[in-house]
Image (cartoon, rainbow, N blue to C red; front, side, top):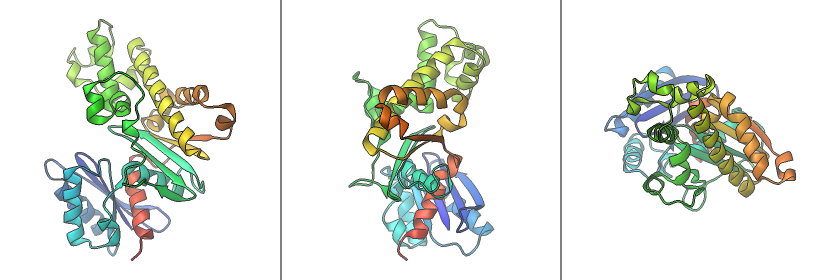
Length: 296
């Protein structure tokens, strides 16, 4: 089975066997042509795993013109019902993957929540993905957690503006411009535009006070968002992905703490919380799983 994730500037393809083992993986930079990147990534995994069926497709932004154009191009070559349904949201596909072979294996009701360059989430209810009337649920990036109105909130959503990679870096930069001193400045020779998320996280690990404060604020937003997801979905398990699993040493316990502050005791006691196991390939794996299960 084949799975493809279309990101803003990257296409990631995987070929799997029926147990979910990755037989081949490829990625291609999109540049200005996401369609070409999708074909390139798929062709590479097909070469390593010939005879696989049409791909399932996940996207970090299913409504974008680039994604829609790529889907049209793919459908012309890989005719299949799953492609014609349009791309599934990456968070939903990742939730399917984690309940299939990941941290929530054999769990019937689970919520997946991840933060990286984008903010994504997915809900599996009774073993079936929940997508809403227009295939957008849960649109976690747009969760409103701050009553202040800001232009970036209107562009990408309140939660994503605060906790995705660019938002975390932006908050550190604001602190520096307000007069705080961070060792991250030394790493980039005071070129604030060169700061990366990885530098912020590593500085927090090394005791940089400003970075620690930014991480704490991020964990508070993440815990609030996770609590809202749990309150709505009432899952057996909450799976935390992206930076919350990759940097679990910084985020996992603070997010658990925020969850416990914001959920009633019985709900928190009944909830299992686990870091994701499948990493950044979870959406492509989940898309492959969904395509394999689609009517032929």
